[in-house]
Length: 482
Image: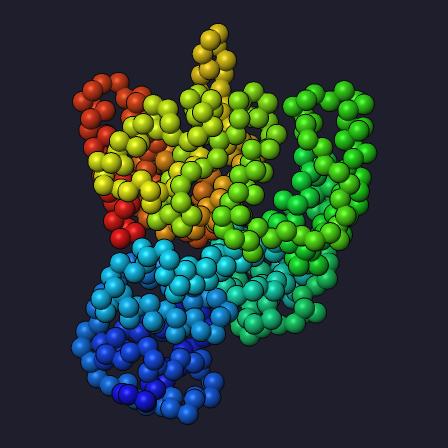
């Protein structure tokens, strides 16, 4: 095999099934990465790209964590992605079984960064796609145009099928198109921007709705631009109103003050008039540590509805690139005073369970879905109050960015509030506990109970039984990232 490349042609730019099948055959035949030439069907092979694949034996198994990483990273636009992933799987099966836990390895870092970029692109597709109504001979069809950075369309059609199952829709991109008829989705070649309608009659209503929910007193232009970069504005109907709404914000806040609006309704920190052409910060292009520090500063400065009575916001703690990221509900009384997560009674039980589950604390990141303590004052005591849907929604952008910056291998939700914040829907813990599901952004998610649940159990026997079960959940989560 020395000096002769084995040519492998994949059916499409994100053909994970094809790549996985060919990688297994290559491993079985003992073909090293430097002897493989990856290309797409139809591309002209290189000078030595036509050698047949020799016969081999059964391929070695690889960690499930690698397969999950590869399935996402392969959608990246980097032309070296196929070769990079094969180099990683070769190393995993040739003496480096713990490779994915080596946080400083350049190839691991590169693959994880690719997967992170793909997930971010998918999040933008979910958030900034706008369908426009077109009447056809077969009935109404909703058509949208989007320009993704990576090869994500086919993988993300399931999101739109679930969300818009009753509509007939088409998503057009320069590379490919997806068409849903209410029964099945059909993939087709790419399209042009002019193939999608420029506007429809419903946009006036949508723009009016957007203008009415735009809160000038809670305006944060830099955060808005980081979450909704300007490159997406051209395809958003509401974007044509953003400059006007930003310019009008200070006057609207002043008018609210004149009318005697309550402090809870008006943000304490008022934003200056913003220049919409000013440079837009992209937190994800920064060094991750700088991005996390900037996000923490933003959370600590947040003056949302729960901030008025809480002592302070409580941000997450732990290392960047932590293998496990634990999301709890909200700070408790002791956390609110200390400014640190998981230091109260439930936190101490959680830390004890980590030790018994042999989960290295230094490889875990802990945070909460809601960043301020919500409570009911009763004399000298502050009684915990469960966050509602509005509280979860307010802090959700912070949580999503925190998870994205940390880039864990697995997210573990502790309790129903965290599960709802991560999945976007209310679910019974008993139905999904200990199983692998997905966050809204496609990350692997392992749900379990919150340790405070154990503290509320009525008798010692049930507490001991459920504590052992909780430790078992932590062990199972840790095994997933080994």
